[in-house]
Length: 294
Image (tube, rainbow, N blue to C red; front, top):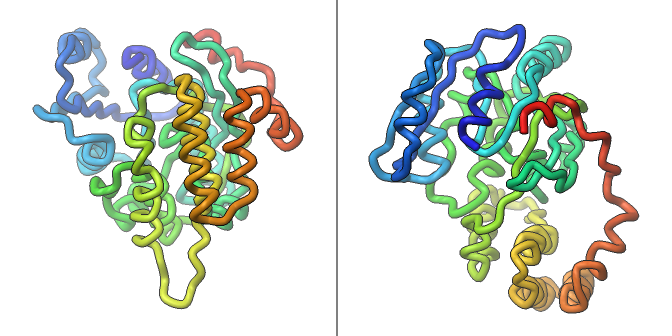
């Protein structure tokens, strides 16, 4: 997957790029595989021990010398026109922070869903309730001066270091969005938040406390967050864990919605997914560039 991700970054059209790969303490053949790539634009920096995604991104950001910084996780994929389209959108709007729509795929490249790019005003409105960024970090790009002003990703956060970062970077850059599907996000099982699902709500409280302002209401959506974690647990076949998490937030938030989700989770995926079809954005045709990449 790393080779595939790097191929998509190396294949960006009509834009100059520097490619910085952070090898975060790999113990497999990653170093030798990277050493075989003959590309003068590529620099590989190795952390001898893994420090997690926040520390890895921070090291890459510190080394970057371009006018813009874009993040690409090692399992995700960019369309060949991704960076060019985002630069053009930023130039039209005077923005310093840009995202795009994302296609979701599984580990075998099969379609797993679609996340449309929210409009800038919707993104700003929702970011203190829920993480509205499609496809994690791999859809986002920001001016380097805004990145420097926002600071680093917070390595103390067990999850949501990207969510925290979007809140902070909005203080330093005007946002805009590209509606086109310019990235593919790989849906994983066994993620950090799923392994620590029993402390997921505590992790959210850490993030909420960081952004709590005196006199301002806390708008972080515990029910939506728990539903997101529960979706991942169900994907791994852990339906009881998903139902218990939703029941817990139903009690703590006195939420009828969460209680209903917990009950439907026990009935099966069909019971959970059926009502979602009413509001879920329709999946567009699979882009040709994605078929070529996988």
